[in-house]
Image (cartoon, rainbow, N blue to C red; front, side, top):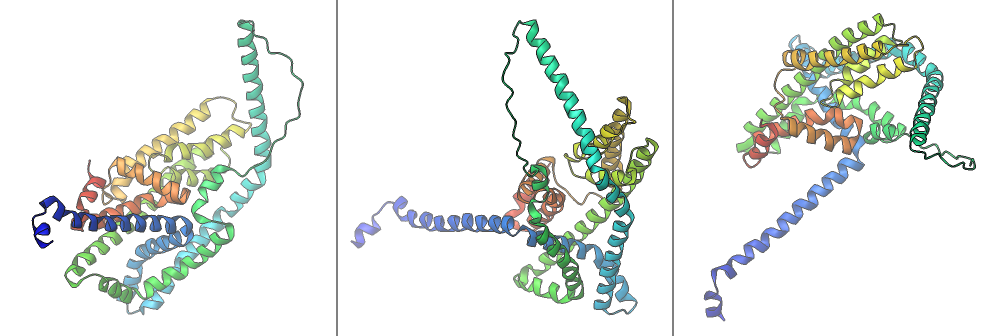
Length: 369
């Protein structure tokens, strides 16, 4: 038996390692499926955690500045969180009246929109009848049957709120974000040390470089896009006000930040002002609609080609294909919030791939031209 084993061909002796590699591949597939399962069904937890990490990255320089003037770190973290909440509260206070007025006018806008849709349906029906008469195909009279319409929730609303879950879950998640940010900032040194301890000693220096690079990238990306959005909002709000478009300030701000979404931003941004203009009775010609669409497009081009390179920089080295795939994947997984987080998450993954030897080809593919 021993001689038979020794005389076996090399291919036979090479089979066991190939078979041993199959369980490893299966385990990787199972692990990937488990990760996707958790990301989908525990989306509100992961979204809250990622948003808290990004906010902590943005507020960290302010905490360090307070530490330099001998303010204890936990007090500095508390002051930065309270200041951020005050800014959010002030923004909500400033736009609350306009949002309430828009919500109050929604029934009138809906009625006006139904009138426009009914007029379009009549026009299309007349065109169809005229076309049928030209070929002598007159529609046969049919008994009028009652139409039953079942109101269903809007699929767009479901998609936009997919990653946030129910209203109760969303409120609870939002309430936890300030606490998460405070604990991350207050115990940053301990978290930093324990995170680096997760890596082997020979890789800790590289891991520290990667984490610091991700922190700088996220901070510059978030703050830069906020400044770009505010500048674009000022321009758009001014133009909408000159056109006597209702809710000009609210629409300008909404359109400015919607246009920052890669590729999908322009059509998403054009929809709200064009819809308001459509149901606004004093817009009787086509020129205001053309001017609104042209203004949104030009401001988007200005933001992407001039403001973003200056304020955001070029830290997010992602090619067009990787950004498109990221938008599709995270949009499918988390809905509207996934579109917002897709680019910084993918850029962070690329930074990790660039510093891990086995993942460098993937990092080059994500950022290659």
